[in-house]
Each structure stands twice: as C-alpha cells, then as structure tokens.
Length: 277
Image (cartoon, rainbow, N blue to C red; front, top):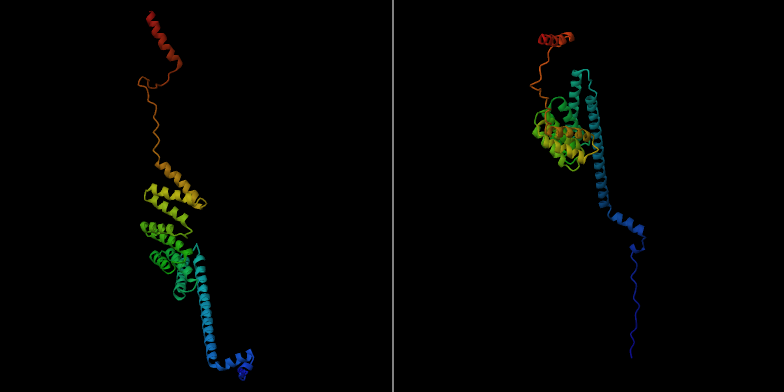
C-alpha cells in the first residue's frame, strides 16, 4: 500500500508594498496621482475664488443700492409742507434715485421695495400713468412676493380711481380678495362697499360691509362699516307715514278782535231794555 507524501507549499516572497504601513501606502498613492490631485485642487481653488467674488460683488451692489434707496427715502419723507416748490423738487429727486436703484441694481433685495416706492412717488407727483405702469411692472417681476403683491394691487386700484377708471379699480380690489395670503382684505372690502355706494347700489354695499363685520370683527374698519350699515338700512326702510294736521271745524267762528268787558255786557242789556218797553 502506497502513501502520498505531502509537500509543504512554498510561500511567495513578500512584496515591498505589503511591508509598508497604511500611511506610507497613502503617501505613495499620492505621489503616483500627484498630477491629477494638483489639477483637482486647482479647480477647487478657482471655484472657491469665483464664489467668493460673486458673494463680494453681491454685497457691494446691495450696499450701493441700499444707500441710494435710503437717500431717495430721505428726499421723499422730508418734503417741506410750507414750500410746495421745494417739496416738488425733492419728490422728483426721490423719483430719480428710485429709478437708479431699479434700473442699475434690479437683482438686489432692495429693488422690490424701491420699485414700490417709485410708483407711490410717481402717483404723488401726479404722474398717474407712470405710477400705474410701475405697479404693473412690480406685479410682473415679483408676483411671488406675497407680502407686497396685495399692497401693490391696492395702490394700483387707488391710481385707477384717480384716473376715474372705477371698473378697473373694482376688478383690482376683487383680485385682492381672491389672494389667500393678502393681509388687507378688510380695507379692500370697505373700499368696495364705498364704490358700490358711489354707484347707488346699496345692496352691494351692504353685502361688503356685512362681510367685513363678520370676517374681520377686530378690524378698525368694522366699526365704521357698522355705522354705514345702519345708515343704509334706514334708507332702505319705508318712509314713516306723514303726520296729519288737525282739521279745523267749519262752524268755528274766526277769531275776532276782543272787546272791552263793559261794551260786551252793555249791548245785551240795551237790547233787553228795548224789548221791555
């Protein structure tokens, strides 16, 4: 019976890389990919520099826009009440500065507010058509700015009223009521009610006043709406019947001039004396 002799396997000699530690292998890998690594680091540095440059540029433009806006607001608010000519000059300066903010720095956070103030200043300067176009531009550019859209729509409606376009004003007011995030619906209801009254439509006015009192009882316009409701209800109620003056009797003798007591008694006495004789 034969036996198989097992021959022990010979181990291969260790490679140099197996004798290195993990840190040494990492450093060796870096040396092998040094070129690609340098390129990647360079790209990262360039990207970081670009981002930093954009951030710095945005900061500088926002700072300049804010300075212009503040200067325009100073001209707008500090108009002298006793000097119409100077007040007009300052108002026009404010309009010029607001236009610079809007045209030169349209992407800054200051631009929406400057555009809104520009429309207000134009309407105040009796440039109503320009103000309307400015408000429409705001609604086109910043339709997603829910905190300002309803306020701009309200100002737009007032501008339509100044031009006598009451139908356009009513449509603009109605659009505010359809906006879920509008914060000025109470005032808009009051304005719509006033428009209905101006058109001699008391039913429509009552409806708006009652909606205002029901949905916004704590509004400062609710108390005035309650007064208007009472006035309109009195106008709607039938007139009270007229008071009938007392009818004078036909047998009543007209008043005569009073006579002295002596004369009134002497006449019957004289007549009775004649009868006796």
